[in-house]
Every structure is written in structure tokens, then in C-alpha cells.
Amino acid sequence: MTAALDHVLALLDLEVIEENIFRGVSPDERRQNVFGGQVAGQALVAAGRTVERGTVHSLHAYFLRPGDMSVPILYEVDRIRDGRSFTTRRVVAIQHGKAIFNLAASFHVDEPGVDHQLPMPPDIPAADSLPTFDELIAPVRHRFEGWPLPARPFDIRYVEPPVPWLLREGPLPARQRVWIRADGTLPDDPLLHACLVAYASDMTVLDTALLPHGFKWSDAGLMSASIDHAMWFHRPFRADDWLFYDQDSPTATGARALARGSIFTADGRLAVSVVQEGLLRTSRRVAPAGA
Image 1 (cartoon, rainbow, N blue to C red):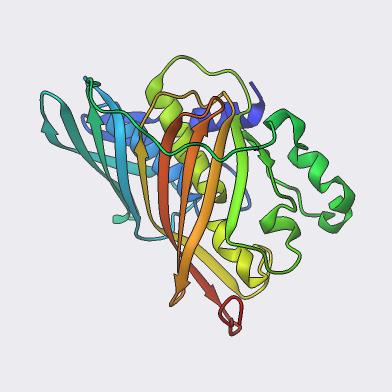
Image 2: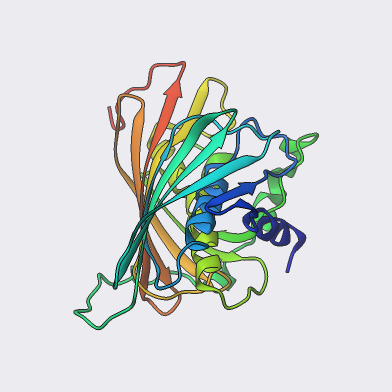
């Protein structure tokens, strides 16, 4: 297990303060606000630790205020319902006496039923045949002298380089396809694997909405933030196996962009569906894509 992944696992190992109250911390990084995937992952851990039966099948979350990296986050769990098949939890993340994040999560005891799915896109190159992140940016690493790139707990392989947020070169279609895998071997804990995929799902999905507009994340005058995030967990998976994340952005307007993704296992099973709306504010006027 890499040090970066070990650090994320430590972030997800919340401290128990009182019944239904947990405390999480943030990494010591030069980041302005807490990463949204971290808060979502920690909130799902808090919810899951109060559930005795079933595995998570959906979550719906709202990012209410920017998180402060310098102070812990308190997670208060409301045990909404414990049913025979479904268990529902609500989690509020609090800093400085105010809610910064709200999550509703539902857990389901597996049962037989109908089964179908859309197929995984065909002819996707294998993850191991694609360059690593370090290999991808090696030709332009000199651009980032004095800017230490953060450690990466997930191995991410881009099917269509260049990496959008780092090496954007002109408008592209609003679609992005990546392979993701936790960079190490994990224990057999379905909740942990779900929390890690919740964490990773926020790392690339909103990038997709920038592609048609010629932006990259380092552009001055661009302000971005997650507004809400929803996930549905369909079939078993492991976060330390390769997962194919097919993402697109069907629309953006009024400084809000919608992005969505389908996460498949390497053998083609649809494991997770993701939808996120993000805030994308810019100081320059942006013409409609294709105009």
C-alpha cells in the first residue's frame, strides 16, 4: 500500500466522540478548501458505522459551505429508519457551529430480483496498457517547477490524454474516460470499498464539464465547487481492482454544470452510477460550445 492511500485510509478511520457523533480530520496540504470526496467518504463511514444490516445502495449529498482544512469536522448521524430490508441514515458535517455538508444514505439487504444493465463501452484499452500519471506529464513536468503535485492515492489512467485539468489544449467533447484503482491492497470490507469509490468519484467527474470550453483547473478567474453529488451502488466491486469510469456532461448553464458517470468493473459489470452538479464561475464571458 502506498503512503498516499494509507493516509486516505487514516482519514476515513473516524474518531468516535459519542453515540452517533464522529470526528474526522483533513490532510496537511496546501489546499484552499476540504476536498469534496473526502467529506463524502467520511460521512458515508459515519453512516455505515451505525448500520448493522445491509450494504450501501445509494447516497445523496449537498455541499453547503467550503470546508476548513485547519480544523476537524464533526459528523452527526441521525438514525432515520431501521427496516427489515432498508436502513436510512442522515449525516450532517459541522465546522465552526455550522453545517458544511449534508448526506442521506440508504442501505439494503441483498435479495433476488430482476437483473439487467447497459453494456460497458466496447474496445476500451486495458488499464495496464495506458501511461501512468507520472509518465503522462513527464514531457511537461518543467511547467510545474516549484509546484509540488500532491501524492495520489489512486492510480488513474486516462483513455484520452491529455489530462484535462493539467494539460488542456483547446475545446474537446464533453466526455472523459478513465481507469481508476486504489494504489494498494485493501481489506475485505464492502463499506470501505464504497467509501473509497465515493472519494474517487469526485476526483475527475466535474473536469468533464470544462472540456468544451477551453478551460483547465489552473486558469486564473475560474472558480469551481461541487454543489451536490449522488451515487447508486448496483453490484459488488473492489476499489483495489481496476474500475472503468465513463463520464460525460450533458449540459452547463447559469454557472452550473451537470456531470455524470458510470463505473464498470474490468469484466464489464455496471457497479456504480454517479451524478454531480458543480458550480463553475468564470471571470470571462464564455460563448456556448460550438458557437
